[in-house]
Length: 394
Image (cartoon, rainbow, N blue to C red; front, side, top):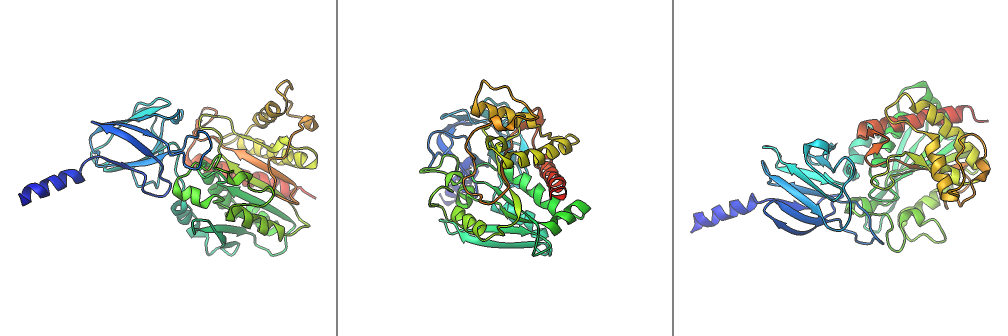
């Protein structure tokens, strides 16, 4: 009887398991039957629908499993992202398994005892810690914490500057919406670009102070929340009146004591809906000097990025702005900026020359497959554009 009990226990341990018990995990398993799983994304604290999910499967070596989402279409145009090394690196499923916008199949290899799947490439605290470790002793880097989240997690603040007194400043934020993880790879590229040994980066460190917040919705990132349309409102909408989240409240406090006499940008990194393929900004929804300064910076980015895989096109941003303002207006890249009458999307970046919200697609930019590699290159191109802008500013 003892041997039989041990045999049954060993068999149970080897049965296929699906869970979200890890940083960034999100899934609800409705049922499973002989290799077929009915699942849906957890929409806790979310108004309406959104598409983020992330789970792992263990003990499925050599098996072919199918996963069917029951709530909504939440599989992107390249299928899910998957990782076979514990979430350290990710690839798109593409032709490795069949998929639709609501389901996918995967054939597990002989040695794939643990595989992670996600609507996008997960990026959490452990990824940030691994990335930033090599820069901690850089004299131009100051890394500390501004507050604790409601869940008791430290919220990082990174300053990059080689001098105390500088002429310019730049605020950079990411993950106002917890699930928008592709933005974090762009942020890595920006930071790496700021801290490399090029003459342009050295000039930026001497003349610009960069204030960077990598995780605005810290709890949401680690808990695997959608973050978008969080009830009663998400972090991106928490700069009006009195902030209800510790992170946004602390960011406002930081900005209040920043140098008031130095011009600068606020760059806010986002991802749009799951299937959008255009990389655009919100920069042209405002009026006046802020819009003109945004145009100068983004024109530099457009020119620089043409030599890279991910190409930024100003026209996409104008098309977006004009759709929002008046669908009957025909977009014009040059001039006529003042026709764009709308509210500033940023309600809380005081005394800054301009606020630019980047919308970086989840899967594809035009027909280019997105990866951590080309997103980091795009981040470096943003740094090159910032150099062109600031070095020619008066």
